[in-house]
View 1: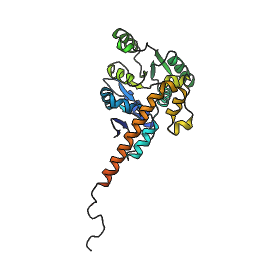
View 2: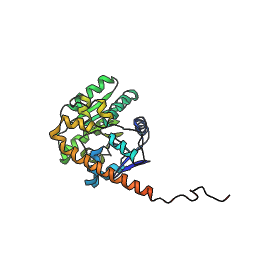
View 3: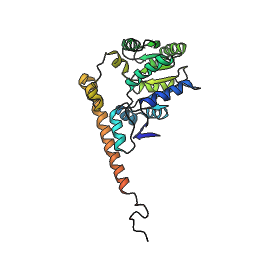
View 4: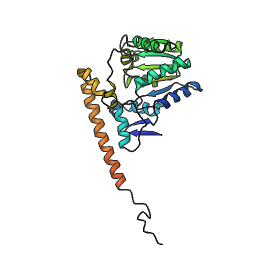
Length: 267
């Protein structure tokens, strides 16, 4: 059962169950790639303005809460998620599982050099990890059929078990949806995870992560690039959460009392 926040739906599973479901999907028969999405506060704003993005999120095989604020919101709305499943942490966990189970992985996207450095970090951490492809196509390649065909041909030839796609939302989700016929077990949208794993972008300290303030850390690191995104996304998220809480409160108060609720029945 999924928790619904405005136009976003999220599976009520934790990191362990997420990995288990991916493992089950990789071991069973399939006629298309599985798609794992990792919604956060920014996704809420994007989903309200991009109908296609909303549709893709809704039909994803797994949708897990990347952001702590979504976990908090689920608790306030009475449909609690078991916890955060951060996309970067999920990528690292899947790399470890891949090393143990013999799954192959392919890294697609990121800024120049990020995928190579991330792969090096993961292979150092998990020496048995088999990275069979690293590809950083030029920005906007998906809008040029010839370039897109070159990328998909390389992936088709490699046929990885897991494809990590890092174009940023909503481009990565749309690209995956258009290429689920590729011979890939599971495609995971990972946003800026290559930069974080490689160390090219400094990740927030654990205090900020646990307090749901990782966005604030990123804003401090890149204020010129991110101030508008977070101002719009966070304001929209808070206004939607307030509205949904008020609606839930009035809906609860308007429910009729159960029959016999006064306890004054006949003897």
